[in-house]
Image 1 (cartoon, rainbow, N blue to C red):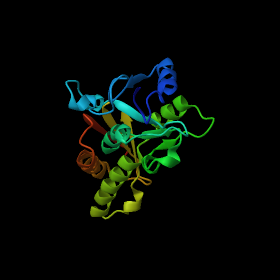
Image 2 (cartoon, helix red, strand yellow):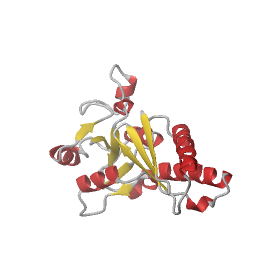
Image 3 (spheres, rainbow, N blue to C red):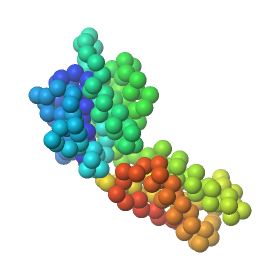
Length: 204
């Protein structure tokens, strides 16, 4: 799994990054270890690691308590990841940062950063799921069916989104095929970055 590792203070993420690498994950960053937070790779001759489209999780490691942090350039990568709907994990002292509100998970004291990152990377995306269910419900309602029957799960696999539509009661196959097209379109408008949006519909 590819993980974008960010840090609020130089060196704060070293241990987490080493543990993730030891677990077999690929680490990418917004800039080199010996470079300033600004400008990032996306603004220099290198390309942004998010441009490849296969980052599964972004990890922000906060500075240790008592360390004075100048500016918020380190949070820029987190903002970029969130705009691409990549789940964010915050480790350290998240109560000092507005990122906690947007994080998919916060690493609690005593928890393994690697375990939390791996868990988040395997979880369905709730925001994508809401979009998929909304589009699915619209199709059901247009065909005289109860929109509450709509249920969907969306999971990111590398550069792709995998969508499963599971109505809570039998629905005609033709309606499910229409729903698949509508759901794919709604997700593409919501998130233009996945290379493939694969929708699997379970009819009656």
